[in-house]
Length: 433
Image 1: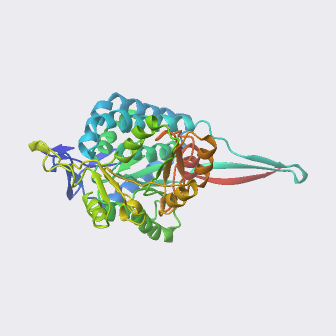
Image 2: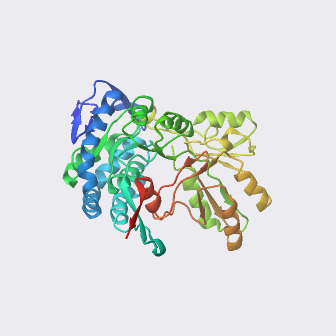
């Protein structure tokens, strides 16, 4: 790290060392709109160096036992937890989310990701069958894939980056990771803990920069056989195209337009607070203007109410929570993912109608259903085209179970078993006796 009086300057982390870059890009404090950090603008040269380091580290790391890797992951979790407040403050400043959310959700979940995969890697089993008539025994074996290219988004920076790194290295792979150039600080902070945790040099390499330069260099590198990406559907389409010549393994967790179905028998005391949190959790004015032009009603928020900010925050990226009603299903606000505090509220008459309308979007990441009718809850959940359906709750996750989307929301699943299968290769071995 190097720094000036006003700016934090990040460096890539390659082969266990922080390495300066020849060029940098500005990162902004969303609460003030001012540049507060400079992030490496890495490209092919930096990615090549990171891949070489990961390749050199792979034989040693992959030969360690699951127990040895588990102990190191637990140590890293302890170190992050020890510095939880510093990580939370940095995440809030860098990403713009509330300090409370960073302190109670993002950073604790990053800690839990390492602890969860440190445990789960110890409990996987393989298959074995016998063909007594021909004197053969068959069994399966799983081995790490190699170098994992991991690309994570800006909305849940450390939360989702660790959700990829933890299973990748738990399975014995080495890593070249690229967090979002807009939210890189907590990833850089975590790099300072790798050595203390006992992670050998080159096992985890962090290359900062943009998608078109650093991200594409990772995706196109012939020595990176596996890509795990969370981000936009449009970017994923390019990843698929660039990966095709190399037949790479892909896990793509993409956009969502997650419907909340509130039936007339829902417990509103539970439903309303949870729906408000889910609708306004992320921090888009053009969408609101488009909705108005289409004839929708802006019930409150943007364009209706005034937003008073202190002088230090007037250039910041603030927007009032906005509720839109009387909007058509084909509106962009109903069909496209909006990363802002905007929610659309529309009425429906029948169960059949609301299922059809909820399934009309191109995405299928998650949905919520609110009803006190248990039969209806099961029935509707089965028919919704979503990879995850919460009923009478929101954001309750068991990491053992699959997470991922249908349709344009992604390819593949993540979770204990699914991540283990993605980050390993399976082979069948037959023994004649």
